Length: 344
Image (cartoon, rainbow, N blue to C red; front, side, top):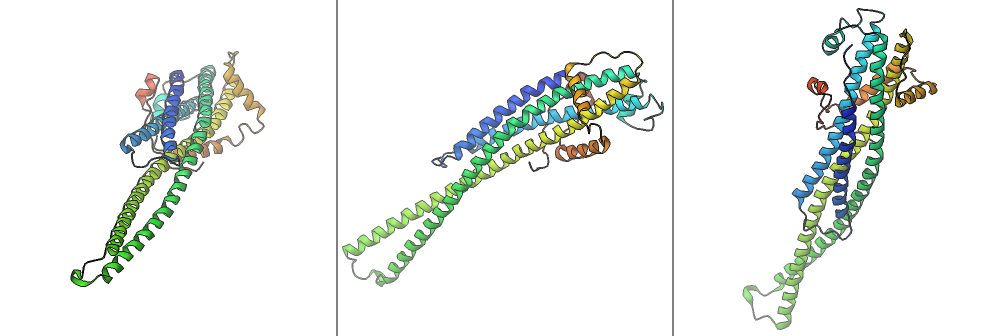
């Protein structure tokens, strides 16, 4: 049977990748929170710096997500290989019509039940560690998602207040411009006689008021454009967090079904073993005990597995597949992804 690569290195890499993603999200959230303060200045923002900070946070989060998705795919491929080897215990031609990767790897030799059980124990050990890593991600992402959503709501509230102020400033400017036109129309043609001191003072006051209204209108328009740009950036980052939470949910649901499949296959392989099987690790024993305690464990497994795989493909179809060189080295490199936006 094909050798099951050690997943310990990739599992151990999950924690530092998640820690880096967490630091990036915290830094991005700090920037968003500064913008949402009621007295935040919108006239002195370094957009290139803030955009690069948000992009880096997104890259780190998607790198962790890609790494986890690739681990799930590799475990799934090895489980399919073990399943074909188990079928060949009863039908030596099982899988011989298949083409591609599985045929090249499976038909290197026949496996005995003990070897299949040993490989499944390794896969279940990796699955248990991956389940713990995924369980750590959701409590980290959800609070940040809610916090960023609250900051975005405050930005939207400030935008509405700014729209009201801008509308009032526009009406004031129109009123002053109308008064200016009326005064110009009432002035004597061709200069006429010299204006009185009171009339000149009125003209000067009206000009100053109109200039101040124009400056205020321009300032409010500039702040509104800046605020709209901030809202667009924050909405995009919030959508990334939303997709991250949805991806964790989908990967957790798929891993749960995959673990059931591996436990069922392990129990079947152990039943065919003639000798005594070694005691599996504690984590694997806990998975087997949870499977036995679940009255619906293994029920309708094939259809649930198909639905979980379809949901995984829809949400994470852009995550790069792990190539053969990464698998032979026992590790995989995170790849950027652009998953379809889901709903939490």
